[in-house]
Length: 169
Length: 108
Image (cartoon, rainbow over all chains, first blue to last red; front, side, top):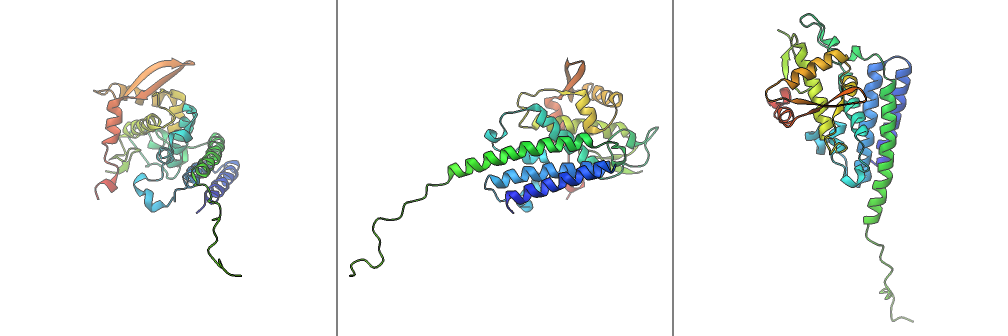
């Protein structure tokens, strides 16, 4: 799959996340926002000329943070701890958004303590974070393409001594 | 006894609600520490941690204080930033997360 396919799917997920957020389906919106960012990171991997196949990355799981650590340092620059916060926060919330919490704990519901699906009451900031991270990824895709282009061997000029048909006429 | 999985993949009884929150906080701080965007080990603001685990200020602060008081401490508090408490995972905390068996899959 090309990087444009990954990026298109990421953009589609983000659009769906916006729609769900507007319709107050917050946990689903957060999940799709996280999916958008994960797929955009995979687009960078593919733009670097690497074949991204799930079976190659089973040991990594699907964590965006882990995928982002595969990127070369030059492509991460300029380093920005705020980007790290957005990735970490969105990832954690996206994982938590999938399932309801266990019903009851002593004195307090687990749902009141950690982030299960039903405790996520807003998603606008998650969608905004995902949009910002997609912009970050788009920039890295352009830079990855330039780097790959620069590494390609130069095209050889045609040979000055044609072999076919020589000596006739 | 009902068992559930924490953010670090530990299977614990659901009445240990504090453990669920502490594992979520540790996971967030570990991922932040490991991010290529945080090579200088910048601490994380309490408000960012609270948002990441979708909990409440007081509950997360209590979980962080508990993690600070472990021997050795798994989390350390740094200087406040813009009136916001800041925290980061310690070397022991990193080791704790890395050595954690990751869920049922780790048994197979």
